[in-house]
Length: 128
Image (tube, one colour):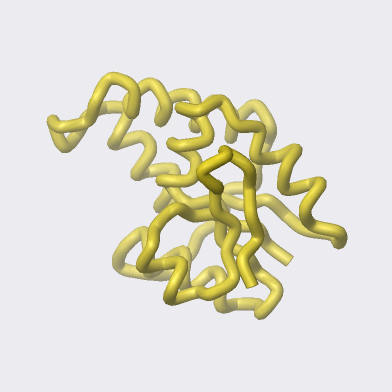
């Protein structure tokens, strides 16, 4: 099983100082690999570099922190097929019915059904 990390999830957790790794470990009772698609890595790098010229300082810092955490915790970076970041994440998640995506993206939540998201109380929740 893969637990796939999305850009907005990583940014939110970094900005709010949430230890998603610990919470996921408590939530999932079977073996899993925590993975981040290379498309997400590139998107975080673009946010950090402010390629779009409209990224807040907090989000730039959060993107930088998210990248540091990925490297420090040796989270597995994987290649996924897709024209967009979201398409790559959806394709990766559909490789195995057990795969779960960590996202805050409402559209992706409805597309995938079973996701890990952050509650208003800043706790991780596994849907369905």
